[in-house]
Image (cartoon, rainbow, N blue to C red; front, side, top):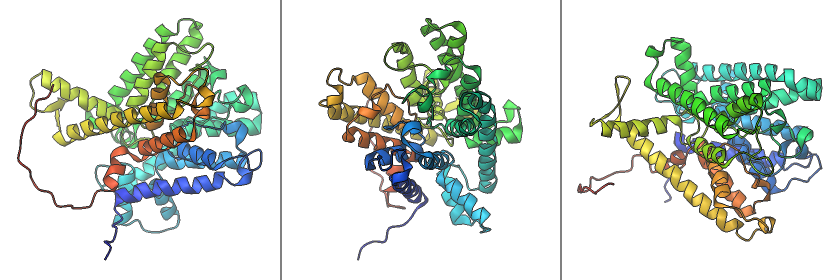
Amino acid sequence: MPRKIRLTPVRLLVLGYLAVILIGTLLLIIPFASKITGSASFMDALFTTVSASCVTGLIVQDTATHWSAFGQVVILLLIQIGGIGFMTVVYLLLRLGGKKIGLKERTFMQESVSAPTLSGMGKLTSTILFGTLLFEGLGAFILCFRFVPDFGWGEGIWMAVFTSVSAFCNAGFDLMGTKTGKFSSLTAYSGDPIVCLTIPLLIIVGGLGFFVWQDIKKNKFRFRKYELHTKLVLIMTAVLVVVPTAVIIGAEDELPWKERIFSSFFTAVTPRTAGFNVLPLSGAGSVRSVTILLTIILMFIGGSSGSTAGGVKTNTIAVLFLSVVSVVRGKRSVECFGRRIDDTNVKNAAQFFTVFLSLIVAGTILLCLFEEHNPAFAEQPVSPTEAVFEVVSALATVGLTTGITPSLTIGSQIVLCVLMFLGRAGCMTVMLAWKTPNAPTAELPLERVRIG
């Protein structure tokens, strides 16, 4: 008799994201979802849905010129669901329907937002929903001052709302194709203060994480009272904004000063992890190679745990760095701000880092193999740097590209779809989804191996 499959919270999370992808694909393949009726292929619809629901931003068809108003609304809804987590949306619908939220729903919600405990899940969810509406609304209001004069009232407001939601959810989708050409992103606004400040700030706030919001809301600006998680996130975020901005200002020295400062700040923030760009990443006038390398590193790191961002996460990098410091200082445990970090956290950080890096290597090799005989790159084959850039962008759910995405073979597109899904649902989460609950384990004989 076949064994009954138990629907654990982890499995529900994975199945939930797959269900959202399936529904989104079916909606985008509807003939009137495209501006040219029926012009979207199944692969176009699937790739766009995965990218939107996984808040990535990689596209094979320009969002503004290819998809109709209906298609754009579907994409925006997918971004919103992917950004705050589909279980948060389910929680909201249950509350609106007047249904009492039980232990089972709270457990699923805990897994969806990576909460450490079940305590305060209702309050956390309210904070997520209220904060999302507040920041997206403020962002849209400010962006209206730039987009309404450029596009008119109706289109300008829609542009502002779409861009604000996309930025806050760290998605990177834009509707600029009608203004500056297909796949142009925000290059028309390089050096514009409103765009180059508002969008990065939305990205930063969305990438801080819901637990950081709650901690700041509770303790205001009293840094000493913050949880260690919040302290690490804020310090890492500050370092990963200030240092890259300074490096890019020095590297892109051909730009006028005003444009260089604003564009460098934008370029330093957006790889963590929203696929907007105001400086061209390929072709004539593209950024320097040091900026490309720095972008790959920032995409790899990403945002913070429990946020709309992807990547290996700032918390992971901080814990691994502190573990190295503890070895140098001769400490037996990892310490920070007068606290000792649990050894399990250090182990989990190392595991996640290793899995993430392994997927990047595997994805890059597959991409190079699939594109080796692609006629679209006959004159100039895809370089290893371009392949790594594309793979890291997909797995870290960033969405930046050197321009090769629309010309990739179906094999490469499928690889990127899988990486985007793993990046959003969580590499370890997908692996744990197949683990047998409460499987018996046995202690094996202990033996040491030499490291380093």
